[in-house]
Image (cartoon, rainbow, N blue to C red; front, side, top):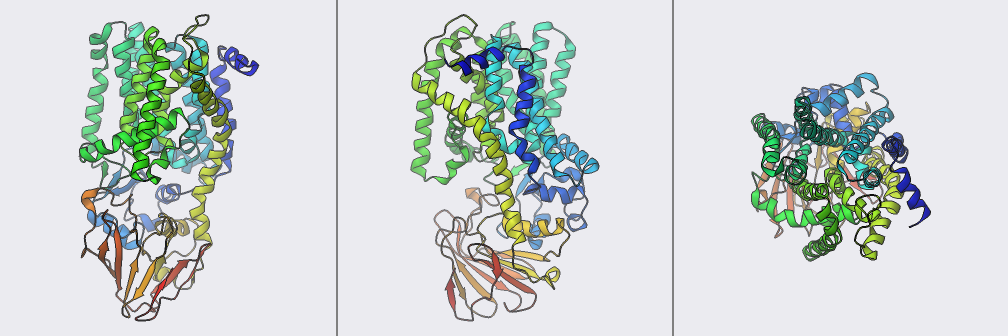
Length: 580
């Protein structure tokens, strides 16, 4: 064991270790302070500032997480403006009840509306607060101060937390995590001390957490683990003790649904109640990718990039790794019931995380249980002075490299990349070659957008900067990943666009039940879109756009991506075709 590791283990036992780790996390994530507003931050800024351009869609700050509310008329109104693409499912629902998180953003725009760096600092402080309360929880539950300190270090430097910390609009995840940890801490105090105030505090923390982020429901896995393995009153009474939390979740879920919140029709969020078979078919692959992302520094979001056979290979690899990890952990699990609690909580946290597309940002609650398990393998004992069973050297080396070398080195890099990658859309919009003289009265027709989110954000970005924005945006389909597009001009009004592999629309019409069929039409005020061919997966492959006016009309402004930026474009002549 190296001197550095011995020093870390020694420092981990000191009272101020959680405080120093909180400060260390602020240092590692400091690049976020240089970031601006990106992606959903821009829309939320307009909502919170009451911009009249969005007033007919968002009448209250508490609608800032209403990305789509399931109302076909309101969805149609947003499609008309181009804030949603034409292929959006009319009944699409992507709406979340997060009033506690909203209040923190309202505070931002009341006190420092023109200082994004303070908004980022606000999110960073939530992350640091999570480390402080997690330090309290680990030190209460884990069998040694050393193990608690090492587990807390592993969690604090985990680079998978970059997006929740660096993206202002993702602050809600940190808020849910903070109150979820408080639930476990207060519940343990109640069960050991018998003070009813702690029971009330745990229930209040759960309510606040759910109203900050629905992902707080993942704490239920840890409560169940506590009841089964840790509660001194044994499993039956321990289970009865967590029933109040179940009642809270049921009431919350009922109100949540009655108020029209939830997700419907988008593959990025799958409601297990509405689409059980889709969810169950996703669970093995999504869960495997998230498991590897937590244990072996595997970017979970890469899962969807690979073909089906590679996805199944990921599942097999994850099972193999899980078996090796379980084999190494088994002696420790037998000795320490609290590790069984964290192990069960980690595995059950994979279930709510798998309702969304695999992404490292979903690892917050999964890591809560994983880090004590990784920590006990690295420390090599569950109590100071008691030797543990030797762990396979290859596994230890991988864990050390992933969690003690790569993670702290990459956390600031990934934080910086959040702004860099997110800001690419802003940069592309800023670089567009536009004729602004009549833009506010025109439809901006966008061809071969290289990223799915560019076209819907054109108006949002320009409105936020106080420059002319198009009356409407017409995205003729994103070209991601890039491949040749064929354009055919049939007559003065009709342009046919063909993409061999089909136009992707995961986020707006993702469920298999909602795929397009040949002959389907979307009618907008200035264009009628007809599906002429689809792929085997149901993606639009050949689409005809019939404009209400000739394509050369002054009410239309065309732009095309030339590989570097969007430039002005002239549609091909009648009867002509070309490939982009």
